[in-house]
Amino acid sequence: MAADLKTFIRRALAAGERIDVGQFRLLNLAAVQERAGESWPSVRKKVFTAATQFLVNRLGADNAVIPCEEGFLVLFAKAPDDPAAVLAALNDALMTFFLGNPETRPLAVESTASRVDANDITNLAQAAIPGSAEAPALRPLPRIRAASECSENEVIAHYRPIWDAQKQAVAFNACLPKVVIGGRALEGRRAISTGMAKASQFELDACALGAAIEMILAMASRQKRIRLRVAIHASCWTDHGQRAELMTILDTLPAPLRKSLLVRIDGLSGQLSAQASALAELAPTGVGLMAEIPFGETGLEMFDGIGISLFSCASPPPVNANSEGLLDHDAKALNRMVKAGLALKAASYLHDVRDLLVLKAGMTSGIRFFSGQAVIPDRSSPSPAQPLSIVDICRVHKAA
Image (cartoon, rainbow, N blue to C red):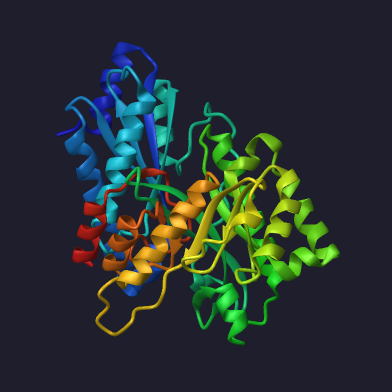
């Protein structure tokens, strides 16, 4: 069993040394609270008790695990050879632990390392993470709010983790604008197209772009890199005033971080030449470029030379109530699309994947990136880049 706080402080004061501290902040607690409803107090206690025990089991007897307001402190009695590597391994293990439980699946974890004096440990443990007065100034993360806290028709940002089948890991996230309707956060584009939302396409684009840039800058202040995908609607790109306002937002992202932002043009998936022209105009800004194409499309020559790094398409809807994955001709069409993309040195991405059979068929067809309910559900903060095997994904679905 790990050391309690009083024992740890007594030993640390006797040694008279600075203490290596790992700080873990739990993200998306608001989403777990919203899902738990009136049972939130007991769910919260269960989350922190189980996670504390999980960390205790992975640490030596001389170390201490201290639950805090938004996460945990790990106090190392002896400095690890590589604190960052130790914390990264604990971070990944904790994320996998949360993914395996339907109640905690929305949670993400942010970890940082620091060194403090033994006298400061008590104050640090009582503060919300991050909490050391000696820690470097961190840019605050974008505020996360549950849909129940928002007003009707309010536009907020959510995140969709994107899975890399080749590396068996969460690779990056899409930053999605959603509209709160009836206490639920619905996809903004779809809500507008069905007449459910009063928001404009520009409001959606400004929200997602601003939130993504805030998140990239906040993570950079923590010496961490995160990659996010956003979309700009064609109607906003062709409107000179709206384009100028979006470019003003983009200008707040320093040039060295621009490749952390992958941008797609929405509304032109059936007009590839017009989409290629818009992406070519966007290319000089230095952001990454992604093209949205029809399912199985192979005529991609108009994108040659622009610098597209990713071609994406939506998964077809199930052919019947008992989906059996992709039909043979669909799988072959995906395989041809993958080869056409690779000829332009770009990977392929299948989104809106709703069942495991489609996911596995897409993998067999050569698709590298996937997102949708069959992978990881949307969440209110981005999922960290972390290992996630197809076995883990299947196990989570069986546990749901």
